[in-house]
Amino acid sequence: MPNRKQSPYQKLQLLVIGSIDEFSLESRIFHSFSAIAFVVLPIQAIFNLAINLPIPALTSLVVCFIQFGLYYLSRFKNKLNIAVILSSIEINILTAFNYFFNSGITGGTLLLFAISLFMAISVSQKKHWFIWFGLNLGTVITITCMEYYDPAVIKIQYATRQDLFIDNVGTYIFIIFILYVGTSSIRKNYNAQKQLADEKTLTLESLNAEKDKLFSIISHDLRSPLALTQQYFSALKEVEMDNEERLELEKELVNNLTNAEDLLSNLLNWAKNQMQNATPKIKKINLNQLLEKKMEVFQNIALKKDIQLITNINENINIKADMDMLRLIIRNLLNNAIKFTPAGGKIVLTAIKQDADCIISVKDTGIGIPTDKHGDIFSLKANSTYGTENEKGTGLGLVLCKDYTLLQKGKIWFTSTEGVGTTFFVSLPCA
Image (cartoon, rainbow, N blue to C red; front, top):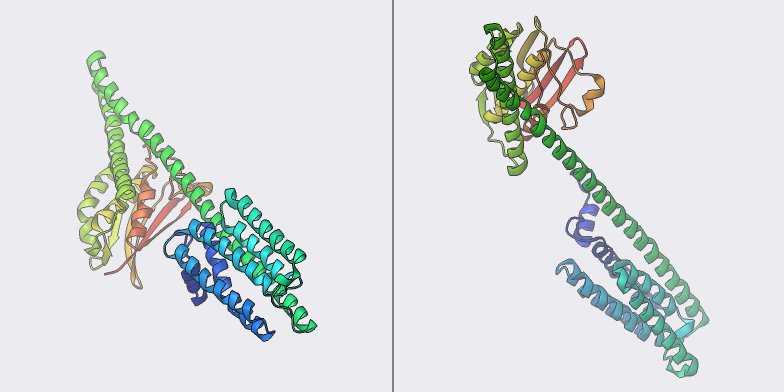
């Protein structure tokens, strides 16, 4: 998920409840309920003391203390199941004890049994729900029957009718507060879990699409030049060819082998980047010196296609970049420009300083990129296409350009008009 600046409240919440990557949904709900208990139970203890119920007040503090230990067991020892089991048993026992010291059926204890069952079911496995339901119901039936047949078991009665109403209304308010905050926490944690699951699903779909794309590239684009090479040597053995036919076939063979070399280079670099999580070796680079030798190669390639290649780079431009990654970016951008520019066209490689960055641009007068392809141009969703002289694209070059540009803390974008041309821009920090 994207990194966002967290508020102090969000940091505290993350510390108390735990992160979605580290804890399950049930764990985070348990931690949320425990945090609510740490706030509500001391307040309830003070409330009980105010209406002359010292034993229930003490019971609330004991539950709070025990719950803190169980919270620690789950949050820091990662033993949720044990914490949930002990918590459910502890709450049922102490709530039953509180029943006898809080005016029995006329008090608010039965409401506490209801909320304790809600919390137990919220944080436990489904196979345990029947156990907690049976324990809760069995405890309630047992203690109410004891009071019915022997009213003397109730040790403390309310001093006044006013205390009875205050306690029952106060208990109700505490319970609806717990229900509100607890349900909000459940929904929030559930939505966070669902969002994470959705993101993982999208990631898996993307990885699956990349896998299919790579198999397509390997099975088709790489096999074609090898098959053509085989055909060429078979033809040499079996068919008589004149010089013109031989030269034409050799030209096609050279183009295909060049495409295969580009494909293998991009494929190996992409695979290395995916498997080894490539780390750029950033250093000061003089852009003009880096490209000087490479431009001779591209000048020859462009000349064969009758394309004018113009370079306009200031000798004093120094940038912070990884030398190999930058070479690959420029090579792919120039290869694409030559590939998709018809004979008689022009390509201009420019580098200028803009504030603290260097903007490298490769502008061509080629066929342009269709508008409906703009959104996928830097992804493996983009289909490889043929150049103006039937040169085959690999579909990986621009993906690598984007990955390597981002790794160097740069930006890459483009503008394109069909039939007019395309300009790719790469922004990298100046040295």
